[in-house]
Image (tube, rainbow, N blue to C red; front, top):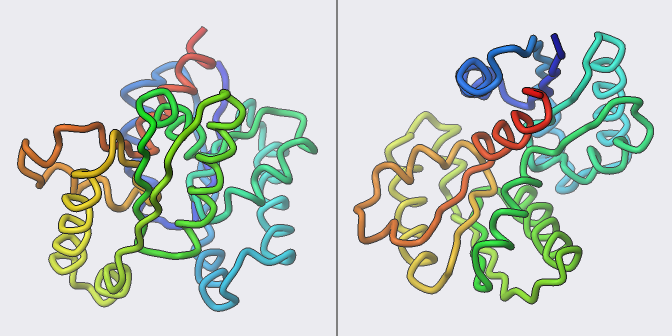
Length: 219
């Protein structure tokens, strides 16, 4: 029975991925590593710094030592550190937004990327550009930040967060072929949109990442 390690920077994502794994990876054992100080450190320093990247590499090594056959890192903000550490791991390491970026590139030329944190918007936008180049696809990328939404969520005002994200999503969808959610926390907002505002694909990373891993681990 294969073992999947999930590395999170928010405890709120543990049940989200647990549900997905139970549904799509029934024969896979999972375990979680959580450190929510990583994203706070990125926010405080304004960027993914070398010391934070070393900590990410340490968690990947710890997951490998814990018996993982595959590692999934569920936070987009530390994606560049995941890619830097992956070649040094003896097991495959996946950043959560790579399958989503690949799906977006396959879906359309005008790709919108939306985030509530600039530290997430940059890495995800960069990933989409690189995956498009690797696939030989020309794209027009539009990154959009939702100012105030993350702060509202941290202050406990989920309704304000959802309203700001929904407004930005409607606006971006009107001029895109596909929209990428840079943060998994925004996925629930998509379900509140009217059908007319969901006429294009709006992609969230968790289900696409688990679908990708199901194709590898369920064989």
